[in-house]
Image 1 (spheres, rainbow, N blue to C red):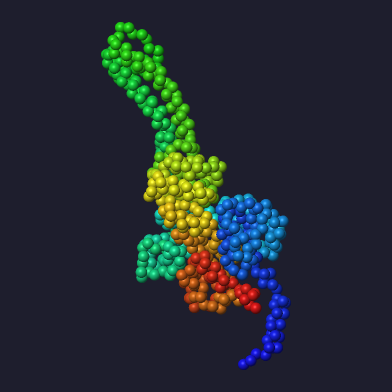
Image 2 (image 1 turned 90 degrees about the vertical axis):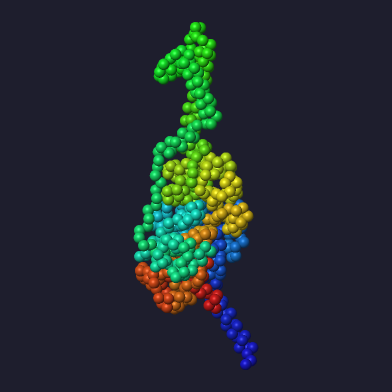
Length: 577
């Protein structure tokens, strides 16, 4: 049937007038603002930018960014503002008034807190996602703001490094409403406790109790209380012996031993020649002759006179040698106990390089697990130096990229090297030097760029490399989108998220069956809380029809969580036109 041109023209005109009367799509999309100064600001912005046309994104960064932060302008649809300070003026310039959420991911807790207070003055109804290292301060900040999520990138990333360094899964328990879950090997969990399998590729696959694979990593229901971490017993005698070994300079010790040997031989000859009987009398005559003034004995034989001369000369050499040994020993022992440059002879320990936010968390978790640790950092003012001293962990202040520093930490007898400083070049050089000293050493390396990390593993034979910002960015982005990320579970190079997603009115999931929320192999539904209730049904009927306000509890990869969130959100305006 032919279409009347006039009718078609009138229809196009009507659609145009309707579009003009409707608000512009850019004005209605959620506006997110991200502030940061290190690689995390890029990965969080990238996560949000991948949400497509549903969000507007503004990023505030300092005028001079670190070299390891990629070009933010390369991200699609991202507006970049450079500002010296995160104050009200900067936030107004970024259009924070009317914004939906603000992420403060600066590497300084105080800067983030000050920026949050300034942001509240500009937009009181703002959702805040704040990066905090100090957990005590984080609890207080949560109570200070009405709508606030406080996340620690160090706390989320540390378990991945600890697990990789030990070559096993670190016991991790997560408390859910009415249930506690944990990550474990399938062989250690009864089949009826398995919730889902977490593959090495980070996929979430349904559990298959009929086909057990003992090496699989699974999310399981805990059948009892979480085990207490093993505490390392402090051994005072071990610490003293370690300091004593550090106090003995090899050359000085040899000189003292040789001198004492000469004294012993000369004293024996003198005692036999003078027919001195008894050990004590012989020792007395020997030391008195060596230390005191020797009398001239013309009546003695030539052998006795020679022994007397040797004793006297040896005694003159012994006193300064003992003084030097005592002074150097005291200095070396103090350095060994306080974290100086003395070589730390240890076996089966873990060497942690870099005591920043992540390194400090890794250090604490290893000590809690009862693992012997040696720490290295080039700065005596690093965040984790005091923590290492409080925990009694030997500390070396030096450049980990230098072979000498690694030798001082006894890296050749360690079980693993964890390199988590913020300098990729230092990290890589330390890893290569450690591998040169011991080719079979387990090395866990922190690198920013995930693609670079994978290529390093292949090219240099570095067993394990991780990107902190890649591990934690999904949690920060999900918190901004008001998706409750309960826990981040490291699985090999990937992060699997345990999250709760709320079904919005007029979203694709509104009126759909619960089974449509499962997106295998990226999303697995493990529970459902109906609208207005806190109780969670952990065995929901997949035919259950979802209504607005329902919260779906899922285990998902970040791409899967993003796809599920799209289904749980109302359609964009431009899609409805």
